[in-house]
Length: 81
Image (tube, rainbow, N blue to C red):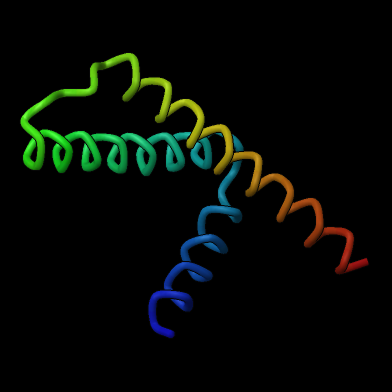
């Protein structure tokens, strides 16, 4: 239950940011996640998936996080009226 509450608070904080900082936060989260996955993959199997995979993952995760924030903000504005 604590992780869900933290996730909701983090989403509200990110969604409250303006456009550029919100995009940078999602980019930072996605890069940290991608590098963590690469590190775990390297430690488990000893192989490196390549930088193209890391960049593609980071771009897709940033775009999906930013789109989710935009959609949540749009729905939140409509419900207030």
